[in-house]
Length: 265
Image 1 (tube, rainbow, N blue to C red):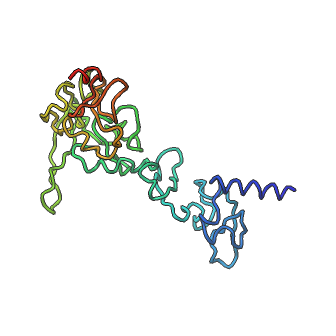
Image 2 (image 1 turned 45 degrees about the vertical axis):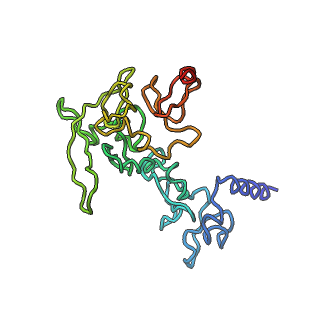
Image 3 (image 1 turned 180 degrees about the vertical axis):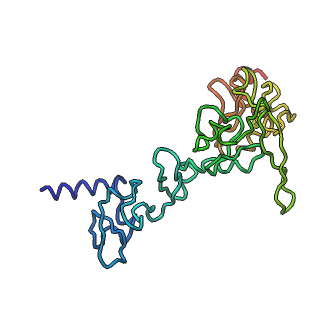
């Protein structure tokens, strides 16, 4: 009876992904070590079997460390990031959503972003020191220690801006000094490079931010919002978002305005 309970429990664990199964590690599970143990090296003459619970537990038990390898069809990411320093195994199509070490990698293509210290991510200036670990290695929350910006004396922070690529040569770099503030005032919009300007100057047809994010923010984040809730500027909070709050509608310029005012036009 006890053996039947163990088998039933293991089947449940396989079904809900709590334990790896034969499909995850072909040849290593379900072979000579049986269905409920992991074969460290199927090619070895003498099998070395370990419990399935020891697979991907962040502690190598096999001499060749194969128990810490990712299973078939998955890729390792977030090694050294987060609570489990051995990383996580995810499907390639899920990497952008589940991997903290490359979630914002695509932002490295934009001007004025900061490269994180130990991950593949890049972050916007307004994300620095905002209390949220966007880099995945906390370097955006301790920018001086990790060298993301220059903090010597009272000098304004320096960000690297890449010139537009017009040839196959390596892009030239220039230094642009900006004064990083903890946050902009009420009624102000924070440009992606950290500058603050009045919300009335956003989407007014003139590029007031040095990075043009007051006019091109939605283009820079193309694909983030869906067609049902398009990228819009919300003046009451001084920020862009997907769609407009209840009682507001998006005008042709992309600004959220009170629905009553729109109906009177």
